[in-house]
Amino acid sequence: MQQTDTIFRIICQIGAFLPLLLVAGILSQLCVHSTDAWEHFGLSFLWGSNWDPSVEDYGALPHVLGTLLTTFLSLFLAIPLSFAVALLITESPEWLNRPLSHCVDLLAAIPSVIYGMWGLFVLVPIMQEYVQPLLTDMFGLIPLPGTAWIWGEDGGGFGFLTAGIILALMVLPYMCAVMRDVFRMTPPMLRESAYGLGCTRMEVTRDVVMRYGIRGILGGIFIGMGRALGETMAVLFVIGNVMDLPSGLFSCGTTIAATLANNFAEATGLQQSALFALGLVLLLMSFSIQLLTRYYLHRVEVVRGETY
Amino acid sequence: MFRKAANQLLNLVAFLSISLAIGGMGWILGTVLCNGSNVLSWDFITASSKPYGEPGAGVGNALLGTIIMTTGATLLAVPPALVGGIYLAEFGKHSKPADALRFCANAMMGVPSILVGLFVYALLVIPSGNFSGLAGTVALAIIMLPVIMRTTEDMLLMVPNAMRESALALGMSRMRTTLCIVARCARNGLATGVLLSLARVSGETAPLLFTALFADSWPVNFFTGPTASTPVLITEYTTNSPFESMHAMGWGAALLMTIFILTINITTRCIFHENRH
Image 1 (spheres, rainbow over the protein chains, first blue to last red):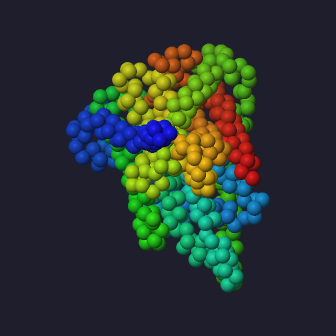
Image 2: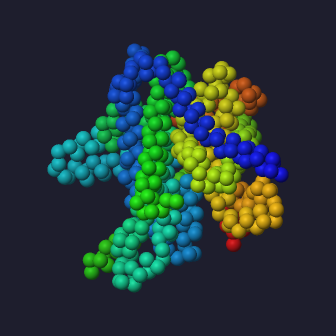
Image 3: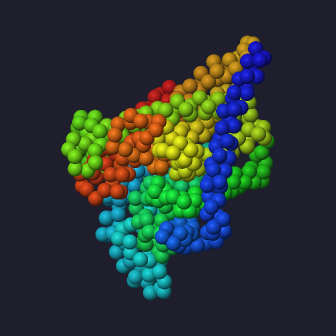
């Protein structure tokens, strides 16, 4: 019996080691296959802004900036939205609470291709017809220098803002789920005493729930960030796929994931190696977010004395 | 006065946001339903896809390809994920190595799915020299593995410790305690985890783009040649094609896929929910 237990334990351990192997495997494969690009361009690959297969000159800057821009746009839109949704879900009565949270969860179940299709056939025309002219007109009234600079070249509905809106809708359920759990963990006693003192719901949220759950809120934001960073299909459909530096919110551009999806299948030689290098950059960005989250959560735990 | 107004404003904002979220979902699903229902027919589901212009085209091969790849990925991913989750929950609750492994599983969950595609391309497609359905299956399995592992761990941790202690006190071995008592208590949760990740993976496109690729044929050479799948078919038909009829077929495939995924999601959630009470 002792023996079967040991064997069982070892089998389980092997299973648990698989993710470690996968992480190491992905990292090493991307490194190995991108060596050509790193040798050829050195670190200047990171700030090169060209992508020209005819002269074999490749640079990562437009892709990296595009990825960061779409990610931050989507977070900027999704943070207040998911915060409000999570708040409403936790504060609403039981019969309303469950269907609402199931609905939000279903938003996460819709595949990204479907978001992409919807974006391409529904959102892009709407952006082109109504939203972009409206925004330009509204901000054109304010006599500030540089408003034209915010919008950039008009991509005809395609572009960073459209991608940001779709991404915001996609990361919302993930962020919302985390925030909802945190809000639920606030001791009811604390909340009720605040209400008892005559606080309004807004004050309870701001001074009790948010103070108590700030850690989870930031955790949720990090999760949304990781999602938005690597999302491929939805962005690919609406970003316009132009390999230039982003010139504004309405301009077309590209992200690392979209570039990979578009060019990888037919790339060879140095271009393929450069694409692997782009993948490596994306992987490192994703890992650093993970590490940051982990470090941050750990530090908060230590400060609060919650570590074992 | 001001405090009340601010509070009302917050309520209004919250209400608007949730209607935006749910309205957005309704809008997306409505669009898919409207555009997709026009082309649905028995022939559409059973016929193979064909190059533009040939009559009698369908999406049957892509559906079959998706079914084969998703099933294969589930078979590949579930056993190691379950035992891995058991290790994390039962043997390594607070130990340093288990923490490191848990971090790796989390990191794998966060890896963009397109990079998994790149990895499998480097691992299987370059050495074997051809795109294959098998490579796509492996890519999907890699995406599933950490998700199932973490849900397994969470579900096992929800089983009260008294269960383990009483089983051990009866003289059961650690293995039997885990498999017959703890895993049994958590089986609803485990099934939900597996089914939800299956649903998620069946809609994944990015990892298949350069592993399984696409083909206008039935998946006969699954191990050696490109294999069609529904999400990649949708991508091909909507982004790389100027023809209205192709777009319509894309919508039809999207409708089938959405119905499949939402059905799995809703039924598993309902069943799990009922059993818990």
